[in-house]
Length: 389
Image 1 (cartoon, rainbow, N blue to C red):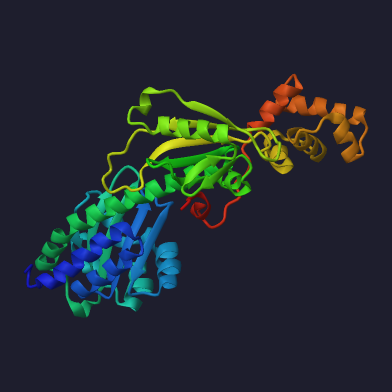
Image 2: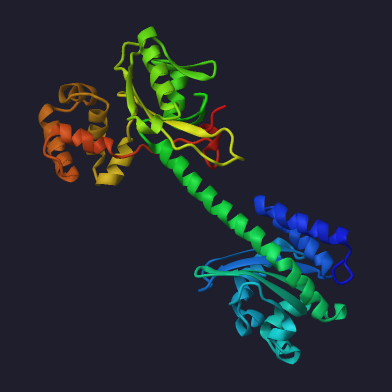
């Protein structure tokens, strides 16, 4: 037991704290459990930058819109407790009476307009972290009738705080990892070539948008069961040899292998490259990516005319010309398609080269192809499209 609290109560409290490390929504359960534990009718998890320009909070015990519109957007910068005793030391547990005298609190505008009408009088603050970016804390508040937070309450807070800190640290790392991963996914989708990660058995565990499209088209590369396969015998033997060599335990001593994959449609062959990855030692990670496969499609769709116009500052006519050139049309074909004279197109081409700082048409095409196409993503983070299986 801990200060009269049963082991069952503490076990449930700690379980909710560590559950929140893996699921952000779990912090609301933590706040509800803390409110019950400390006989508080309000609790919030609050994170802000030191200059107070960025902040976010989660609360229980008050309507969320009231908490957001009134406290966060109106009062938090004038919070007398935060002004008098800002969070500076991680692991600190303080009652509001240690921050501000009761008589001084009652003379403030925040007390009259916000705290008193809601019965938010006595408080306890648990400082979770404070670093170069900002601070995070949990505050618990209750009315005068519930009494002041005493030494026993502070002791319970000090017991729980290391667990809250560890959980918050895990949650923070996962959030940064997720944000970085999402950015990586967007970059992969924007790539002008197919990207695949294969596990140690040769099965693709992750695909970007272009790779998914290539497999769907089944024109040079496909899935045969759970493995990549070319659509002609010689090319498939070369592909399987390249994959097997890259997945060999000593593959890191080998150089990347390149395989040309003929297309049944008669189009230009796909070019596939295998790049072995360092083997992961993470025991909890399955399947483990073991091989990176890059597939270049000569006919892959490049950036749109609108993207080219925005990136290089082109007129609509110049951007349309650039898009046609990227698609493989020559000036005479473009003249016929657009109903423009060759001389007009040559003048536009000269302006296009000037704006892209290129001197030859081949150099221009190379420059235009260097602009990634905007990713087309289903869902908010793209993972519905990028993961296979």
